[in-house]
Image (tube, rainbow, N blue to C red; front, side):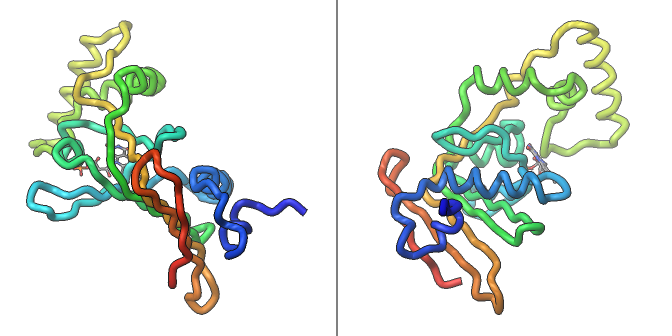
Length: 209
Ligand SMILES: Cc1cc2nc3c(=O)[nH]c(=O)nc-3n(C[C@H](O)[C@H](O)[C@H](O)COP(=O)(O)O)c2cc1C
């Protein structure tokens, strides 16, 4: 009988050949079926210049063989923190599944081509909003922002809205990915995959919950 990757993950004799990226896909597919909204929401942790951690939600956008991408304003708090210290941690918790996935690692910028492609796929209103927002900086009133949006909307008219330089994406290239599944009496299952670098092979350990 064919086993799911998840069954193999928690089978202590059968984990060595597993690819954590493939496991992530299996879990994410389940989350997309069962979560009432935003299965791709994740908490992104960074740290500021003093070392103080910071955390906020972002949306997991594209994923590829290198890592996990999200898009944002590079002049925002998180953008500035990641440009200065390109390392991060992320966690996704799917309440409907009682499962968690954590990852940590270096962060790189997506290419201009990748950012352009995603920006172009967004609704025009969202593109105008991204261009207007001075994300994470003080705003005197909501009305001021709405006026700025109206001005830019009128300026753009029927033409295309190009991606602003300050808006792009980051890719977290994990060197550790941990899968956590709820268990009875808090005897949860945890398996952590880790590797020395992006090109090194993965190894895995079961952890006490
Ligand atoms: C579910 C959810 C998804 C979000 N997704 C994004 C996102 O993909 N990119 C983004 O810049 N902000 C996103 N936000 C807003 C951020 O949480 C945050 O408020 C904003 O990016 C400013 O963060 P910063 O000041 O730490 O840079 C999201 C918020 C929520 C609640």
